[in-house]
Length: 221
Image (tube, rainbow, N blue to C red; front, side):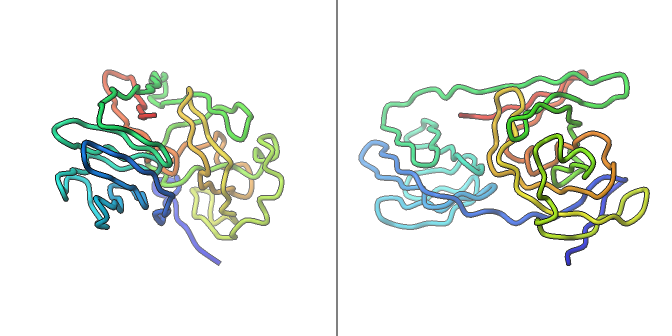
């Protein structure tokens, strides 16, 4: 049985990076294949040579600008190109279209919005202090999460004491059109948290910017 803790009454959990699939691109005379994606790193095959690259590194004239769970941004010949899994791009650069969601801070100095979880709309609290999306066992059935007891059992420490919890995988979470598939979540026994905590298992896939009481979530396609 695993044991987790909550930082300042919220969740804390170190997550493993997940190896993903592959995509292929051709840039000029180069053939670039994405074999695996990590957070801030990727395994690329450039003209037949495999290379594990971290963000900022250059190999074979290709610079890894950024890496997420589903896309990488590469700089080739001074131009940036976004390559998604199983998506082909050519030497002609096309400006990627960003998807941006803005959330205004409420009177409680919190960022609340509505998310679609597995096809059902639910209020969520954006919480960068929670390393995982958290759902109470009382609320889970209303989201169609009925068999969470079959998830990986664990225990979490909350302000109310140590609680039983189960780690599960949500089919997807969508906030304003920014959809992330296969999101790890924790269902906690009882009625805590009172609102779904949108933690880092979702937020790590987006770029966040906070200014003048407005939080912007940005994701490339």
